[in-house]
Image (cartoon, rainbow over all chains, first blue to last red; front, top):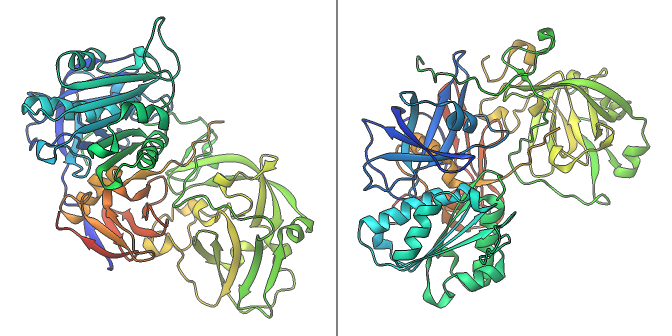
Length: 249
Length: 201
Length: 89
């Protein structure tokens, strides 16, 4: 193997913001119109590039929140307190504004029906975004693959897509469990701690079912979950991981 | 590059005396941690600092020996090639002049190497005459491992990638030998005031 | 003073950069570490992006697998830490 110097081959395209959905106090979904959009697969993401008037540029990646079958292309962004790009996307961006994006990219963290199941989806904070795309895709193609979703958030108000996920849990073969790590509402009978081995042992498919697992969220959560699942006997080759930055849940 | 994101300004910059800010830099109150690899953890009884290469004889100091050398507190501005600058940073360290005292060499360059395999190069004269230290304290506290502790090279007049974290020694060389980032296109010298970020600048 | 600790990401975080450089989707490609022989998908590489360049390391032994540095719109790609890179997926 050697080294080479190359010019870029993946081009940036311009998308227009058409609408917003406020998901939580810190999280907003952005509906985009991208005329050159080639379609995507559930779990993929895009790179977004912002350019200031003086030429300064910043770039970040965001998972695609919409399913390939959805009419609209949607990204969901969490505002990070010390962020440079996310406060702009969540607080400043307006309908009609344009964004440069490239993608979709990411073939590793993708779920499609031929990959089968049963499915275990584990998300922390905004790590639920690509998992929601997978759940929507599963429904759109009429898949009956059994799926369990374990979602860790700070408080109930921080649960992104709460109504949609609770609704899925009610009517579909989707087992939805939340764990609220910082604060719980009165009468809460769900989990109330960071995901650990014991919690996974209760919630995850047994290793004997050979599930296909997708874990997404802050690096610390992803690594805790992945190693706990391996400890519980799961095949590491059937655990796919996507790490976001250091945001806590 | 005519596309502009309406209303995007990037990070808020601190207002400072611009004569202290090299071209293309912005001042931060944070101390960002940049790294190309895991933070090394070398036990202090194994740690040493060496001067090798084109020398009459190699020199080596254990941690205890290094700490017994005279050290000094310095307040310097630091400039990272990723565009942040931090003003008035306070360090304590042993001057390279102390470590190089009495060293006979025909070398004109040095390569600093670190735990984890990192290297960086510069002219020997750029680590002499009060321009460089082996720093083990930052802001009156032992240097945090994430920032290069137990000790890092401190060469503030060059871009901060030259201030090798987790430094373990310098090799005196006859030729200028590009280190890690230099071999991928970063500038061999790296003067922030002439904005020498990349080779050819 | 806010210190941002180094957090590692994985190959997913550089999917766009790699697609740009290789002209195709890369996160499913299988890389073999030249240092320890471990094999895995690029999506599983341990990636450091907070640096003057991007470094991808072996999840098993932390050796450097790939280094990518973009200077003036040209990206230098060093794959010498990989004994093999299988793009067949």
